[in-house]
Image (cartoon, rainbow, N blue to C red; front, side):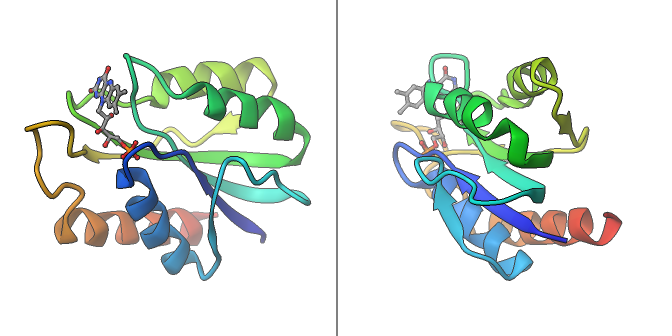
Length: 137
Ligand SMILES: Cc1cc2nc3c(=O)[nH]c(=O)nc-3n(C[C@H](O)[C@H](O)[C@H](O)COP(=O)(O)O)c2cc1C
């Protein structure tokens, strides 16, 4: 089973989560500017929320790499608690990609909000989540 981890980050929060996922999976965490070079059975996709939605770079990555993506597992953070899961599910569905219904979300530091998040507790939690997703496959 091939596992890949991709993320988009503006201020490093999603990258922290991606690094924990990658470490649990025993692979590297790469930005979405790095396309998939072959088929990925599970793609852990790190996407946080900007102006109410995922970054355009995430949509572009899904469209460009659709033929190499088996199943997407979404993780991310935001200031409000809102996840980009719904929008990703919609977009992935429109190009025929399955999205795991369970996703990981935690508060992410933004301006004066959620200082130090994701923190050690969040990283511990996402590590357990990633291991569970891999074991279930
Ligand atoms: C330009 C910008 C726009 C944002 N817009 C939202 C938003 O609409 N809703 C929200 O809940 N959080 C918003 N946030 C907060 C981010 O989702 C949060 O800080 C997240 O952890 C950022 O992850 P990153 O550091 O990987 O980019 C915004 C952050 C930035 C920088």
